[in-house]
Amino acid sequence: MSSAAGANDASSSATPPRFAFVQASWHANIVDQARVGFAAEMAKLGYSDDAIDYYAVPGAFELPLHAKRLAETGRYAGVVCAALVVDGGIYRHDFVAAAVVDGLMRVQLDTGVPVFSVSLTPHHFHEEAHTDYFHAHFVKKGAEAAHACTATVNALDRLPQPIAASLASAGTGNAQADTASAAA
Image (spheres, rainbow, N blue to C red):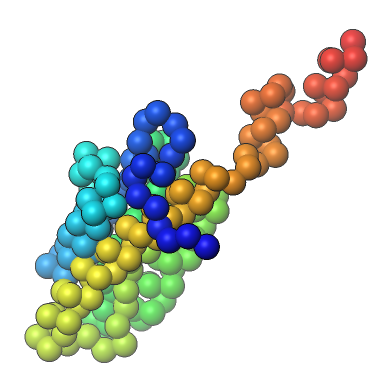
């Protein structure tokens, strides 16, 4: 299997693919680093910063809805979402993180647009002790998301069209109706 391809392989269409990067605003000093790592790696892969639209949402829980709305526009080949969900003592952070990741998975399955998560939840987060670690870790995870995003978009471009899409572009989308009208 080949490694992640660059922008030249990203799409057989004339227009280069566009990507959306959505980040939660909580712990912005850390989560911003995922955007930094993503943008830097996309540039190394040959993508212009103009090919990426950046969005901010209040918290992690808002990521799936924003990802869905962006995916449904048809403008983006992929959507990347980033957040840091920590145990604030008020709610179970693992439930929030699971809801976010499950929601993002549902978005990609429902829309057919790849959605990637850089949404992390540490077991124990002590801001003073862990900020430097997560600062660097989010840069790395952002870069990994760039590779996953471009590799997935490139791989999907090489797959055959789904049957429903093929039928719709060939006629009514109803094979029996198309056969009947061709016979008439």
